[in-house]
Length: 372
Image (cartoon, rainbow, N blue to C red; front, side):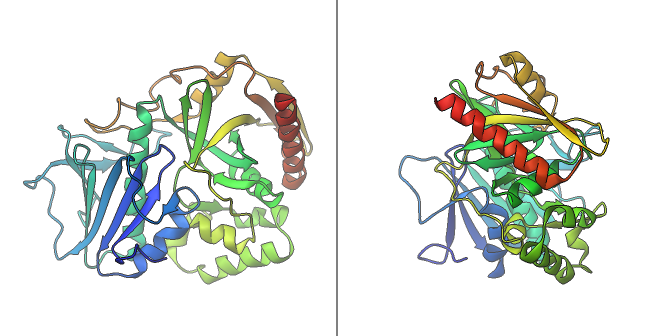
């Protein structure tokens, strides 16, 4: 992937309608290419700035020594583990401008919400993989902050696209969300998210968008989902990176989602502008495992549907000066529109492809009922 006409900037449109302009000053020409498989499934690439849209600038540089916390510019933030069951968070030291540091101070990101700028500094010996993770993580902060003013939340959920609508999958950790997402993709749905999801309201509609991160796969479950060229492609991807610790997490493989989709010969959706989908249905995974499965379809009252999503909300603290506060604190601020969301409770764990096929039939039937 190349930059713009000057070879300087890459432009992306985020789901909230904000643009980011990424400038690689690191001297590593591979950075843009490595970012693509993380960003392109979620953000729309642009040829340049569109007049009237707000822009955040992200500059990436390599430096001999990363300034330690407490430097003259900005105020230090230290990445610390969040409460049990929550992702890591950034803990503020006060003020609207701040720096985010890796624990060993080898990478620092200085964020300024007033100037809408992010300056990322990495030591010369920091790997490109690690630097790429920092870059796409800062785009999540920008998106999260821009959605907080709209009651935005981060859900511990997966999602796929069915036409111009989204099917969201919620369930407890280990309930099979990623396996079901993968099976839905194999049945022709489009990738939105495997583990984290942005959700927010605009008017009476609820919209969702993917959270850039790795796609995590349990090798043991792949034959239940893939066959033929798709299975061979994913197996080849795992073989290629089998000895690289960057591609392993908690007994699973983790890949940039774009690389995974390409290897599995899966549909790569053409993103709408802005890149978001309206929520059409929620699949709630239940714990029973009796060798079969059944799907219980209903339309939840608006408050029940909102509470269901609120139970799977992840807390991410925002720094002062970013958005309206802390997304994920308490219930979703506004209920979902009555009768707009179908809830499908999936009991049991049978053949993932069969379950995915029947779920898509339910969603398509619901969409037809709504449009009739």
